[in-house]
Amino acid sequence: MGGTFDPIHHGHLVAASEVQSFFDLDEVVFVPTGQPWQKQSRQVSPAEDRYLMTVIATASNPRFWVSRVDIDRQGPTYTIDTLRDLRKELPDADLYFITGADALGDIFTWRDADELFDLAHFVGCTRPGFTLDRSTLSGMPADKVTILEIPALAISSTDCRARTMKGEPVWYLVPDGVVQYITKYALYTSAPPTSKLGPPAS
Ligand SMILES: Nc1ncnc2c1ncn2[C@@H]1O[C@H](COP(=O)(O)OP(=O)(O)OP(=O)(O)O)[C@@H](O)[C@H]1O
Ligand SMILES: O=C(O)c1ccc[n+]([C@@H]2O[C@H](COP(=O)([O-])O)[C@@H](O)[C@H]2O)c1
Image 1: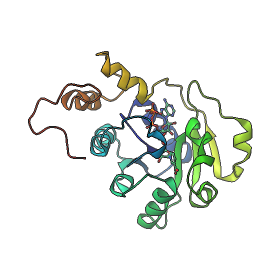
Image 2: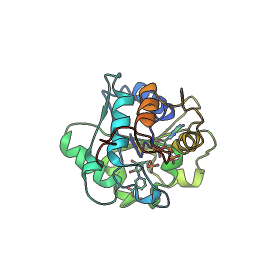
Image 3: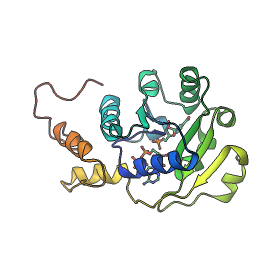
């Protein structure tokens, strides 16, 4: 599952769990983006913070893993590179790329979009407030795409950041350990972290 995970929330985790169960996948690999080039209009938190929050959020599930392929690669993050790197690491695996239906709807704006469907099966999870355009869907190879209805959780990272900024709670929107990480490292606020060591290096 690819995402910026700034921060990871229960919408992501439910989507991953539903896809794992539906396809009986051996494991779900969460891949935090390095430099999400389509989110350049806003400040994205350091990759190490997003990576660590993703590790914390997924640690208790034996089928969930986190990959550094995108954050360790220099330059903008393109899914074509993600899939090529994962294929090198897992040459015998059938790859399923999990996204929200909103992200899937933008896939033809991604780098080398036409080649993506040769490398993985794409799974678009339904998301409250978003309907995938039928014409967009009809442009995709039907045997390489599945739209999966998942329990609707109207949670977004944008809302979690905004709540934190306003001093409102994000308890139960994100895993407890992620709430504690956000507080400890003073993410999404202008306050500095309490330790002189500060947050992890990015
Ligand atoms: N509540 C949700 N339900 C289903 N899919 C989701 C949900 N939230 C995010 N996703 C999907 O998970 C993937 C990674 O999402 P991302 O890390 O960008 O989170 P986000 O909540 O969309 O962030 P932001 O609000 O900052 O854009 C995307 O493909 C997105 O569509
Ligand atoms: O390959 C691309 O050009 C591309 C452009 C935008 C988004 N993506 C991928 O889509 C996934 C969800 O992205 P985001 O920005 O919604 O978190 C994540 O894995 C991104 O790397 C990929």
